[in-house]
Image 1 (tube, rainbow, N blue to C red):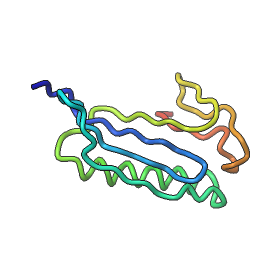
Image 2: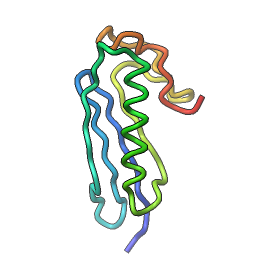
Image 3: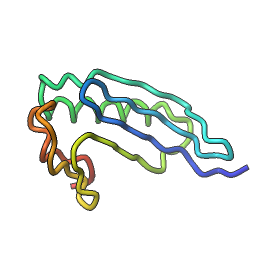
Image 4: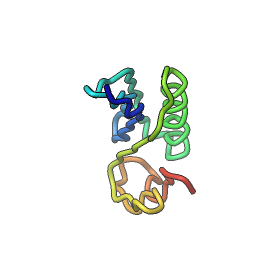
Amino acid sequence: MTDAGTILGIDIGGTKVAAALVDLGDQPTIKAHRSISTQPELGRDHLLASVSNLAVDLIGASVTPVTAVGIGSAGVIDSASGCVISATDLIPGWAGAALGPT
């Protein structure tokens, strides 16, 4: 049996944010998943706080250490900085959002 660890994947969409903890053992298994409404009308800062809270909740629920986090989002993301460099108007102010370490 391979112990490849647990990762957290987050998908930020225009209507919902979905997240899952995945055990990467011999047969990758979703250990927990949750989704929340994006609530784009509340703006970028609210969405970033909601995503952060979702991540903290799932990581806190993990029985094994989370070794990596991956985030997907609509728009064009600069992979080096983790910033949204362009996006539609669906989420006001989304362009410029920092999704990675700053």
